[in-house]
Length: 453
Image 1 (cartoon, rainbow, N blue to C red):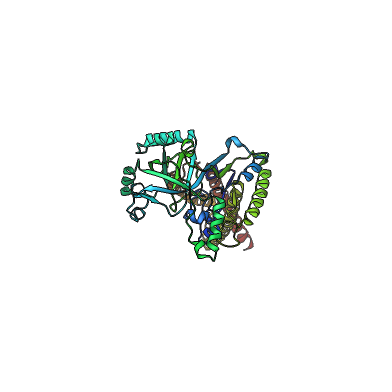
Image 2: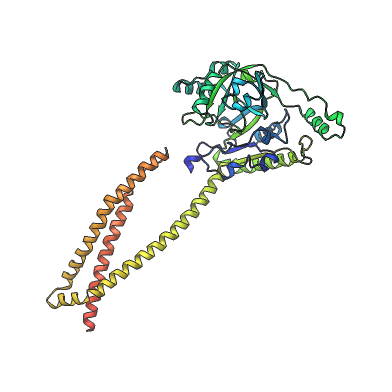
């Protein structure tokens, strides 16, 4: 599990889904997943994410919270990462959206189609764009990264959603126009709520509130992030429920909105990790309490804005240690039971055989066999069985170990195999000791039986 957690940040902070989204089972999938699965991969869409806070100024990690976190002593900011961007409404050409949702492209005869949900735009830095360029070149993919780098294009990222036929449509969609609309301002969102709750029908029928529009971009293509050698560019909440765009810093400046912190990936100095953990937990609790009281925007009366959650790597490690410790105790108990059962069966066989051969031993002694000769005979018999066991150990046992080695190396890239030489030597030595003790005990018992007669 340590290998699986190596790429995880010490602390992952992200915005929670709305209460409506949580009621649909979205945004909490990470709680029941294995630790090697992306915790921010979700089935939810933008509506379920932003239902209680769908206004332009909303940031999953508020500026106030970010400033407080920056004051915490012990965070290694050079190795930490902020995922920045914004939530927007997509307006894209029918040809551009067809690979993702052909049904949506057929809903209208207009060339441009507006999305029904809110999508995510994530800003990439220069190093991330360079890593994408190398990935595209190495795999000879049909992606227009030049437009992305120059700030004239956006790239759609997906999680293995396209079939080969859809991928052909995606290649044809390169260069198609796409632009974004911002969410309503907080002021307009509050007035929208008041208008929808008004009993005045004329007021309810007022025109919709205007949204700001970005410049028009070109679509750079669709890129699958689930490929094994895809660059390590972490994302905020993503999945098949909504579109997820990569954009350059230059390109984001063409969208009339401020960039927000979508996710924080923090690295702490090892010796100060417990202190940092305590401070972050307290700040998150304060932030969530504050947001729960911000009920002005949510369409559900009395419901506050979605809060923040944090995933601590140390907590994950502790959970897995507890899980593994429990498994070891269980397996240890089973092993002890099997050992006792095997030892009981072995003793039963030895003593039964000893009683069955008692007359045989008496006859041998009556014709002159000494105790030393009997010991050698019994030791030889035991050595025969010892050699049989060792032979099976070095043939069938080793073949099984090699099979396990090959299987695990194919499953886990970080798996290292070591031959259990000390364990094998210990087993062989134990068998020899048992052979000697049993031989000595049987000869001694037969001698006592003879003396008693």
